[in-house]
Length: 211
Image 1 (cartoon, rainbow, N blue to C red):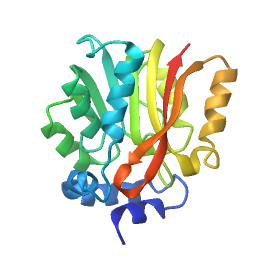
Image 2: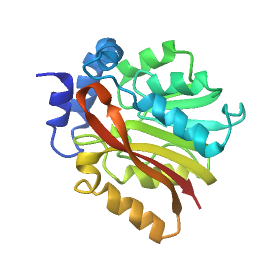
Image 3: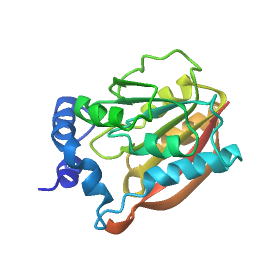
């Protein structure tokens, strides 16, 4: 069974220890496997492009503070660093993944965190939050978006991917609508994009602004 199949076969979002074990074991081969033509994982690069497009700038200002939630081995952080991000913090469930993320030199701080729980950051800490590849089946549920809204500043951005197959059935669409109705966020953009392009997997790339 491939790692991806194993991960997506997990039921619910309560298998924290199981998830951590799988990702710790996968860490050393993760980047290589997702960069393979069979997967062609383009979501991290797209996240950076969407952030720049929304900020209306060719590069990230060096004073912008970003939380990369579910940062894994640092694929998103590396893209953010390449476009100017200098104050990027990363959190992930897997210590093994974080060890590799540290080697990218893209992060200011790295720490373990369970995105299904409250985050250890004060309200309004960050200018932007990215969460790419983590809001998916068997992983982190829609409640995490509440925490992203809490830790981002008023006017700050939240850039997330959510697999198309679970956007509605998984409760993510309803969560976004709930936060819009509560006037906590506005939807800047929501587009179906390539995610793992080689495998033909697409996802919603959603940009939210905190109100």
